[in-house]
Length: 230
Image (cartoon, rainbow, N blue to C red; front, side):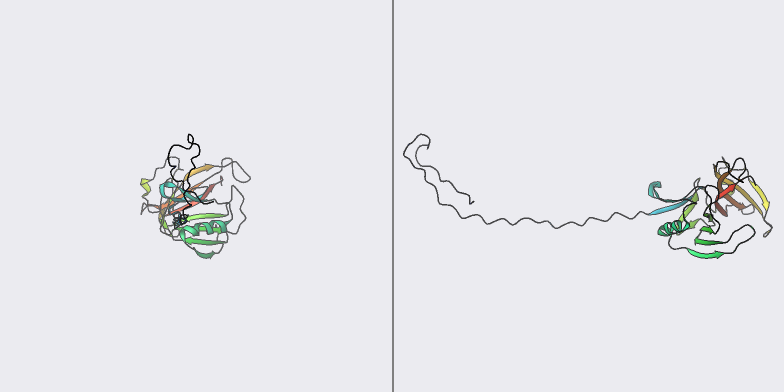
């Protein structure tokens, strides 16, 4: 319906004057419809990708840590190894893989390597919580450009005498036959397990740390490292 423009009534008000007819102005041309305002959509910035800052190794997990100590991903030693390799590769890049032949103390396995971080996937069947699907070896301070530490902050290259030994096992010094050098070995981050078949009365897992005494620095970290009373 077109809007009507009312003209002013002449004379006295319409309510009190009989016989006075109000005059109505002819309808005005309708105003042109106003163009509907359209706003240009402002693109929403995609959320920033989570940036990893370190890899933390404990007896129970491998954790990818980001800014402000945010946990970006956690992998354990009993889930399928393929999941762990795929997950770590998102942060560290693709690993270098090689086959490890069985030895006197090593079962046949596949080694996945990201610089100073190695994941040994043994062929033996795992049995949680005692026997893992895979074991972590740390042989350098970094993997894929990220620092690698234990959950208590130990890294390859740390001075042996700088490590807080509270809660660690007593150090054991022994001569390595292949090198003739004296090496120190101890375990940290101990986690007690319930007794099981062949585990002894007080089984536990932890993180193994070693270093040659003449260098006096950590050169190797392994997790999980078990003590089943053997």
